Image 1 (cartoon, rainbow, N blue to C red):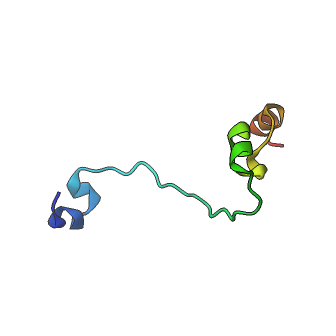
Image 2: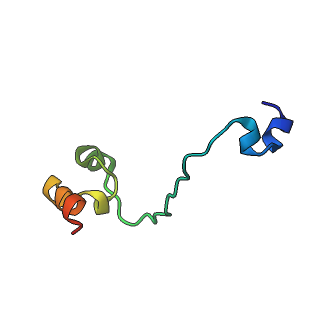
Length: 62
């Protein structure tokens, strides 16, 4: 791909966009130590929930 190709509209390049990513900014507050993060599977305590709590939120919206 050269610079001229980069300036063409997507339809002319044969490219279709299927969606856009949205990633909200997350402020880092409390974090686990590296050893605890490995044990828990996350460095963020806010994301450290049990499977029961996860499933309840996933299917019941609570």
